[in-house]
Image (cartoon, rainbow, N blue to C red):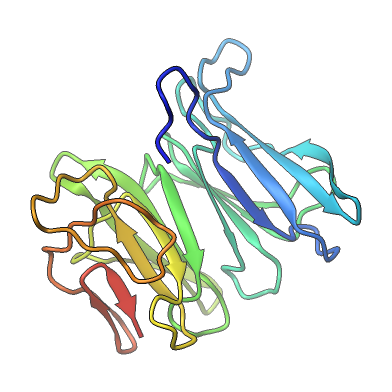
Length: 236
């Protein structure tokens, strides 16, 4: 929900069993945190789950040290994007997204996969298996562009030991969710623009966890392999 006047916006959160001990762990982003002399550099904390609930924590060190104003960890997503059975982490920021492969050690260290300088600013991402293969896809949501105010949507798919990136040119969105919207047992992707003034072009996805107004005037978009997007939803 929107932050009330005089209150701080909610911190980015994500959950997954990052160390493989059978307990869910919590990632907490602090994008407004200042580090040293760098204002709003941002930081990410991993809090370990256990039999007694959440316990000790560790700082996840970025593989590429953010600069002043990068707001590291302003967006978080988790999922097994490379098919090895361990959840990976996508971290958004105003400088670039950063990726970490799981599993994580108790020092908060995963296998850093570097920063995504191709996209630059990437406010957030969602992760889910939308094509039914053995790994989840990264859906990158960089945010609004001057020539694309609806926000571009990119899909990263793991195949033959590497990611391939596809822009979903018929989709707009600055937020998203992966969920089974139509009850067929397959994951669907919903993207939207909560701040959009849709002016009669509004749509609410069935079962989606994303709230707000969604402009779906753009044509349907598709994925290779026969996955067809209807409006702003990828429906297998």
